[in-house]
Amino acid sequence: MATHSSPLRIGIVGFGHLGQYLLERIIKDGTSVGLTLAFVWNRNPEKLERLVPDELVLHNLSSFAERECDVIVEVCHPQVVKEFGVRFLSHSHLMVGSPSALADHDLNTKLRQAAQNNGRTLYVPSGALWGGQDIQKLNDSGTLQALFIRMSKHPSCFRLTEDVLSEWAEEQGRRVLFTGSVAELCPLAPNNVNTMAAAAVAAGTLGFNGVQGEIVADTALSDYHLVEVQVTGVGGFSVHTVRRNPAQLGAVTGSATYNSFWNSLIVCKGHGGRVYLC
Image (tube, rainbow, N blue to C red; front, side, top):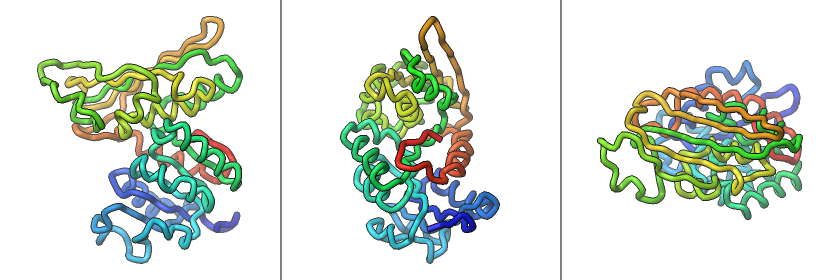
């Protein structure tokens, strides 16, 4: 494990667009920010060929502990968090790139307990959430009353577990796909609502059941994703933010989120037995 004079060893779990981006950034900028690569794992190892040095490829995720990581970064799928999250935290800090997994109350509790018991930190990147730390401060002060998030994207950008777009017609233009609690939304769109999940972590007193969300398919959004956040506090306090995140057609993740994720990884130095929004 790293000491104060040695770089943090990072394990990347998943090699989609975000995993590839993190690999490139660590290779390019890791030395300057105190990071080095311990391993890369992907469900399909053939995808790693000629892109990841052989000595850095982890073929069996169950043997991750042999690589002695300081931080494991999950950028794969909520199911991996469910299967390995507690085990990861028994050896390393864990940055959960699929925080929609935390909508599962039992899993959320087990991960928090594992972090506390092992003195590790469960990091939740803010991603496309603007003002996450401010929401957390409002929550911690006991003055947060309500939180609503609307995420609007081109229909090609959604990856849904239910076929709610089956009757979609291009001429419809804009269509609300679902409105309800983030706890209900996460299983429906686990790859699309990680921003909402991060907000539910920040707003801990409201939690996944108390934070409300809405996903909207809109054919007008061919160049960006739209994230609207409405925060309500005591005494008439409110904040409404609108973030336009540039994105190509079919892209689950907006382009600005990649750099946000990198900046979150840089602060994963260990905050001791807790959940930390970064």
